[in-house]
Length: 225
Image (cartoon, rainbow, N blue to C red; front, side, top):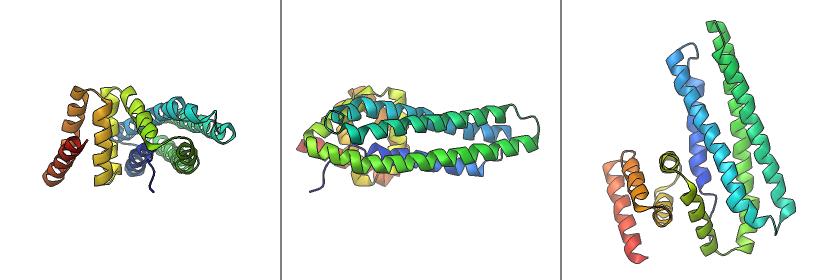
């Protein structure tokens, strides 16, 4: 039987990582406007991965530490290493911002890309590890109803601004069926005004056909609940 995946958010985060990687490698760092756009995306990645690590530790890892401390603590240490890698990127970004010539900007821009790729690969491996090891602990100790409740607690902690960004990348990272299921859980976790705002935000990212299909499936899901 397929169990509930509490780490579904990772699919959205992967989409964010991939998109930022493409933006960085296509950026001409001697162009100030292009560089600003790419570095703003990079800042969003760092902010969201720091927030994500904090949320995981508070709402997920804390629930399983008492059962499998030896397996969970290494992941907390890996979160710290991921934060250190983000700090390394920021150091290089500062060097880039003080660069005076096109040559210096190109060199620093290349260093930013290399540091980001290291950060991205580390986090991809970290998330894959969590999905195997931490999920197995969760599935052993909790039923799916509890996992859904934990996810709803996490969603309820997000500000409307954070929710908009999360929803953008969940749209890009989830299959149609997964997106419908995620939105059903979101509807139960947040205030109606926030949910409606998220739906309006999502509408602009979908084709008309996909939007109507999603709306119909959500309405059917509400009636069946």
